[in-house]
View 1 (cartoon, helix red, strand yellow):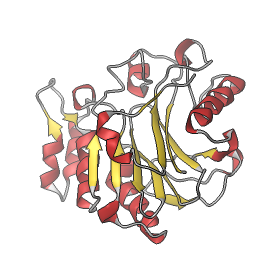
View 2 (cartoon, rainbow, N blue to C red):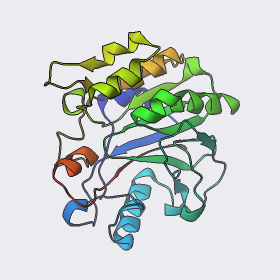
View 3 (spheres, rainbow, N blue to C red):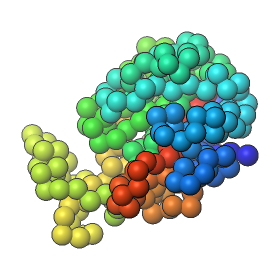
Length: 258
């Protein structure tokens, strides 16, 4: 059975009426570099394996497979509202998905980027966001919160959890990345460190948590698990690239009301 882990830092989401999970790479059918719970339809894994893996995730969440939905991710600041399930081919281009529909599980796929699950339990509104550096910098989290508020949520009641993502120790970037990132905002230099090697390293999760705090959410916590350094339980795009592997698996994170 698919393995969903609710970490201590995500306890704020563990309230009556809200179900969620940051799913690991274990408990699925995929083989080789995709072993075993690869949920990425965009990967070159066997389609039947991916669909069975997703069905196992849906079963853990207690919903039909068709009720586990996600966007076609494009590293944007776009958030969409879902009122009912859609077919995979009809998934909108976006990087956050919001719903107030009971039994509709909204999800994102990641393999180093930060998955962010958000909930306003009182309003019955939840969201899943895919926050890579591009999307986070462009405002995907703020867009998700605004969409939640349009359905009756309030930022001051929202609890957010940041799931497994690449750690600063493993996230080496070029000096040009740092220069561009902090241009016009020198205070963002604090998200970079030279302590891990000759090139700067970026703290994606800290940037995401601070962005959530700045947006006024009630609580935003990082579970602090690195995708690149935990091969046995998590997929990692960067690890695959360093090994010159032809592709990589994607883990799924999902949340629903009901």
